[in-house]
Image (cartoon, rainbow, N blue to C red; front, side, top):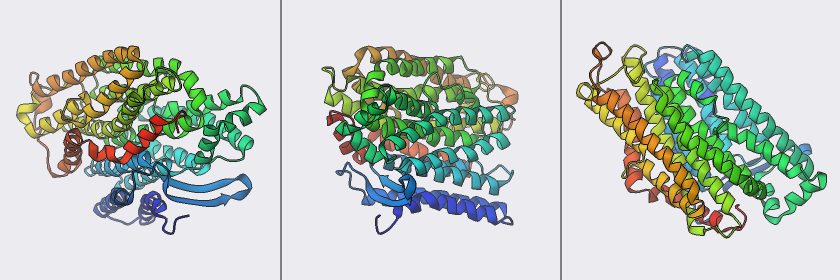
Length: 513
């Protein structure tokens, strides 16, 4: 264990804030909000400290903490950080405080809201930093509890059903995940991700599992796959997402799309790829079709929506499916004559860029839809608005930047990830990239429709009565996200420097590490 447990401090500081707010029952609303924000911002501050001390040329884990926890079950408290983890820690540190800003004008139980958000934030950080399955799975499951209550207690008319659906789907996938790792632990004697990856790289893992039964490696792979596929979600496991995102309060929708959906993509990179490279390679040609279905059908479903929040929800299915498309394209080509190192590097870099950039743009879009809903008495239909550019020009400008970032406009952050993904997939599976272009066209259609109807269409008089432009606290939510959209659009190397050596090592390995 390192002499200073910096990663533990990153994970547990939000939980300390949650405990403080929970026991301080007499805390005034203003103080509760301030404390929640201060503890939430700790992740960003500590993330920047980690970034300053991080050595990107080392592709292994840094700042490791590894102590025996339950020796009889070979369970360790093992934390570690690489370029992938650092990107997601920084994303969590940005999105969560911004989501908390969205709760400032809601008078309903601000102390309890702060507790729930800090619990969810700490759980997500644990997922991104834990390297032993047992603590990792605890964080994975604990993240469901606060989000469930955020949806159920502060959501829309269908919030109860949406919250139950969200939990049932995710726990259903987690049950397969738990069984798979229990089998791994019983067979290999370890559930440590690093140790299992080393066994897989040497070929010893498949031999050990095959000694139990020829079907055993595939069965365990399927269990892990189902657990992380539901979380992304990969089509057709996506049906819980639109109602959960649409019924959740604005702040919870921002956290769900900005942070929690990234836990699923992280699971593919941290669990499936290093531990089951051969099984993923064999399954990848079929999985490519599922990713393409998410890209194309997600965009087409968004086109059909009249509810703006459901439109943005389906766009999340579309955008995260690009990440899986890139991963599966590289996995399918690995070890074949079609494998091209430069294309694989581009695809994997694009995946990490897309994870980070989508977290920013989707959180901003949900916040903008939330402002529309709050200012119009609960309306959020595509045809409920019009001509807002003349009434609220600053709001229109900021929302437009978020829309065009999501669209992938060159000069904004969304372009970088999508360009690299298509560059990589075209070099590995050109037919898949060609089909995915249909999703790009549909994405442009529904996002431009959103922009034209809401901000440039005929004025919807009654809805716009008293509609005001952005005020002080709303700037605190939108300006940081918009600034990062511009910054990463023109200087993506700032983020790429964190993970480039890691991705280059992945692409250069015969078996993806």
